[in-house]
Length: 203
Image (tube, rainbow, N blue to C red; front, side):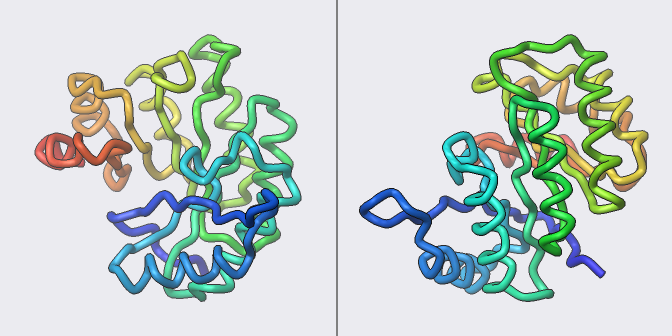
């Protein structure tokens, strides 16, 4: 039984030592501090957690340490993003094996796939998650590609794709997703400065 993802999710940094290694005890301390401060869930190894610079082994180690620190009551969502589709599949399966509560998938950077390619990519990742809740992440400022409302709404029909973290700052698009998505599909603001606007739209 996974913990509910919650409305307030914190993107956690990945503590490192002075030599550039993962500070596992630092990961645990920070995760506990975030829970004590009131977060309802932790995104581990997202873009804030330097996912692009971590090896797959380091990524899984951070996930396991984070989950061990917070226990079963607080959701830990795995940032399982890689520009390599097969690597993303491996990370997703690793999140399942690590006992995490959800998976975050970011629009791939640099390659700029077509919208139909995004549908195929994310549908395959959601299938690999074996029922774990999956959250999409649209951040065109970093990926150089916006995932359209129509694409998001197609993916919202996948049973275990439960929401999207939106950092596009395209409020017409965000409002359309909120208005047309299936009941229970969540839209989280990916930018602190946009949170009130997204909440006003129903996110």
